[in-house]
Every structure is written in structure tokens, then in C-alpha cells.
Length: 346
Image (cartoon, rainbow, N blue to C red; front, side, top):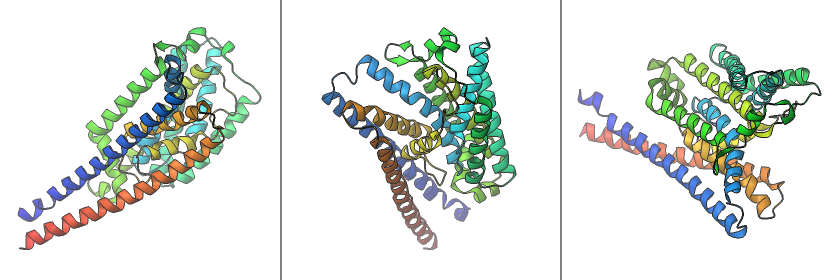
């Protein structure tokens, strides 16, 4: 009995150490974001006006939504590179439905269902077909983008084609807080609660930490991966519908290249690309940081061409930090395991 119970404190201690590191990482992002916004406000007093804050939140909502889905997939040690294409095709599908006189709520549900369908295809190929996620989702990225071009052609949906109430929902809000931000915050809180409080959600972390160990522990690996991809696709579909409400303009190029921004936001937010660690709140902070940089640079007179260079630099820094943290945590766990083994043999 003593031998079986011995390692538990070390494991719990290691888990607690990792959680503390992740909290520090998220706190650091929040501090950097706050300092950046404060410095910009001091340089441009109109930056954090009511409309300025509203624009910051509106700019972040779409990326946060897609980032929540992407983070769930990355936690399972996979990735979905087709989210940009999914966002584009679902936005157009919702717009086409609305242009034909459809109900706005049904249009949103249509976009979510279509996105979930694409996620189901990705998840089936990765989990059941055992095809590497990078290969599968890169392939579906181009397939969906090709279908986009065939379906859309040269057509374009504008705000004039949409119900006025749907478009106003994409801009209006409660003071400085837009309705889209409230909806996004609710989705974020629900998804984060699920991952933390339900066994199936915690299974995704176990799967990302060690797929083989999770399988031996009885985790239904294929079902969990499939569920993560369906959730990711559904949120990309929801983001597509909200993108339509926010901008009121969709064409065949909508969402092109967006997947790279989403991956950057997730990794910068502290979700390890190797899976098993990170939080959805961290991914949301990463998304808010990247979109805020996009707003800050023009406000201080810096050309927006630097945005992608800065995003890439932050991505590399985040990966480097993840690597250093992983090595440090592994070293601490080895020391604790060695001490526990020594104590057991005394």
C-alpha cells in the first residue's frame, strides 16, 4: 500500500507547479496588454474612449471565438488549419440564406451546423483514419477554399443584402461593451468550465499530455479528438455568422490566412503546441493582445505592415518560453521523483 501511494504527492505537486506557471504566463500577458494600452492612451488620449474600447472588443471577438475552438484541439495535441476557410464558407452560407429572406437566428444555426460538419470530417480523418492532423486540415483548408471559389464565384454579399437588425447587432452594445463581446464571453466561460469541470473535458488534457497513457487509463481517445474538432468547427461557424454581422461584407477571400493568426493567438496565450497544457482564457488573452497590437500601431503612427512581423516574433517567443518552461518543470518533477524514491528506500 505504501509503495502504491508514494508517487501521488509528487504528481500533485508537479501538476500544481505547472498550474502556477501557466497562471503566471497569463498574468504576464494581461500585464503586457494593460501597459501597451496605457502607453497608447498617454500618446493618444482618444484611444480608450467609449468608441475606442468598443472597437478593441469588436476586433477581438471573432478571433477569440475561433481561438477557443482551436485551443481545444491544440490541447489534445492536434491542430486545425482549416478554420479560416470554414469561417469564410459559413459566413457566405449565412449571408446567402439571409439574402433569400431567411431568419437571422436560423442563419446563425446554419453556420454553426455547417462548421460542425467540417469539424466532423476533420475529426473523423484524424481520430478514426489515424491521419496526421497537420496533413488532414491542410488538405481540407484547400478543399473548402476551392469549394468557396466554385460556389461564390465573383459574387459578394454586402450589408444592403442583410436584415438591418442583423447588421446592427454586429455593431450595437451596452455602452462600450458590444453584444458580440457579451456573446463571445459567454461561449468562452461555458467552454472553459466544461474543460475544467467535466471528466470528458479533463480527458482532453490527459490525451494531450500523453496519448498512450490516456489510452491505457481508459480515455476514449478517438471520441475526445472527434469532439474537439466538432467543437472547433462549430465555433468557426459561429464566428463566420458573427463576422457577417460585424462587417456586413463577405466574398470568396473571406477568412483567407486567418488560421495562422488563430494559431499565433492560441500559442501566445500559453496553450502549448505539444498539447496537454494551457487554458481557454489564456488563448482569449492572446487573441486580445494580437488584435490590440493591430489597433495600437496605427494609433501611434507606426505602419500596419509591422503587424505580421510582430505577431511572428511573439509566436517564436511563446514557443521558446513553452520549451524552457517544459524543461524546467520536467527537471523539477525528476528531482521530486528522485527524492521520493530515496525516501522510500531509507
